[in-house]
Image 1: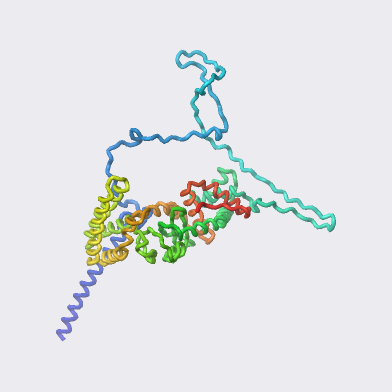
Image 2: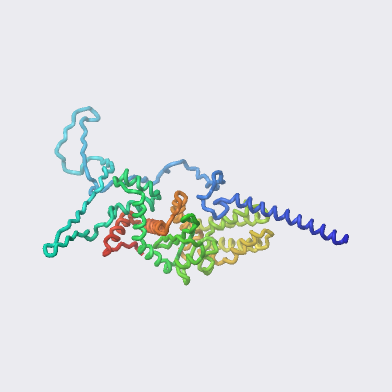
Length: 465
């Protein structure tokens, strides 16, 4: 009996110690989660709370604020003569030296001696309203009364294609709510329009853009380089996901209820053989690591999270911070022609060797999170260095981060989407706006053309592929 009691007492002591360890581990996990921000995790900057530590400022250059000596001035360009609507000549009345009266003489041969000052002003906007009267006539033979039909190209609704394009731009490009769009249309453009009509025009624009977005999606499987990212998007009270894929020809947005890898696989094709730059999200793990490029900026934030987490992973995080800073510095020096190719290659080999040692040591850490993170990165080792071998590939996914930023701002200023038609409009407008910006196209002119084409199906409007 005494031996049983002693065994139970030892077991109780062991369990108490285990409970203490588990409590400490849970507290550390919760403290780490509370302390996460965009500088030490994959969370976007838009999610940072007030008081979040700011990123370290860049080293002062020693130069004063404003334009520097010798810089090229950037001034508003003068409109060409064909764009000027009214020309008003002003002549001096008195000599600025002796106050003598001056008289306008017939223009003498030679270049005109004047300085042009142009003032741009908006005219008072009076929308053009066309009333189509559909008369009815009686047949002299049978007496049947027949009413005329609208001619081809005349909208069956109350608004023309330019009104529809304006509404779509206000809601889908400038991210105004339906109510605010209604207010701008009435107060600025003189077009009273209800909130319901605003939504109907947005839905119609989404349908008109469907063939355009489908054509842009079709270009992705053949693109040699892609950048991909995804972000949360509220839809009808649930969490959906907004996927973004960018190539040199197009930027495509797709809303989906799933964050699974099948979404990106359907977009670019299961047999895609180009290079995809992304973060470490598991939804991209179906790709061959040899045809991936992991974002080193994301990795830097992940390792910074180990530093702020404390414990066994701190020295791993500090070590990684030093190596990644060297990687970025060497890359910048090489791209800016401040170092030779041989020097860059030597530094890169040293960086690879050091980072391999870091991952090996990390896989032996007593901290489970550190072990998992280092093993996961090590399993994708080829995807760390694709940018060294494939021209055009960058070591970061900043291209995707910048492209998806407008969508994040839209999401934070709205309730997302509430219906399937709303989701189609949001993804189509994000796609077309970003792609037009890539090609330097006038978004309003393009939308007006698409809306006109949707009312006259014989014509078509395409974005460059």
